[in-house]
Amino acid sequence: MKIIFVGAAVGAVAVAALLWSQGIAVQAAGVLPYQDEAAVARGSEVYQDYCASCHGGQLQGEPNWRERDAEGYLPAPPHDATGHTWHHGDAQLLATTLKGTEALVGSGYRSRMQGYEDILSEQDILAVLAFIKSTWPPEVIERHNEINAQVGG
Image 1: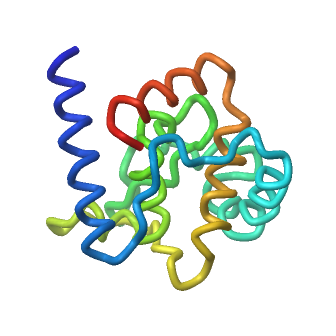
Image 2 (image 1 turned 60 degrees about the vertical axis):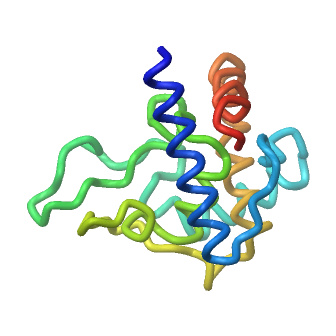
């Protein structure tokens, strides 16, 4: 358990450093307004317009999302409780959505997940992430809140 925590903490520091270096404001842990009905409603609309075509209208992701396709890309993962979205703190989720997976992972990693920093406002992205989180079962939300507390967001 200590190794996982240390790895998560190091990852959070790296994401925070990347965000800071890119001029992106790093907010406090637990920034997703998943209990704000207006933010969640806005997030649902934006999700349907910009995310559902890959991640599914019901957050189910693409089939076989853990297996690379013929071109070497991983299909879009689900954002429901069966996926891994909730395993990442808010800062990492925000950074991934703003910059895209390739930019964050680096080292030649290939992904179809583009960055949305030039397409959506940070508030809209936070609303989408809040909508996603609002759909998770209470025990998954609780665990995600614990992850945020551990990694600082």
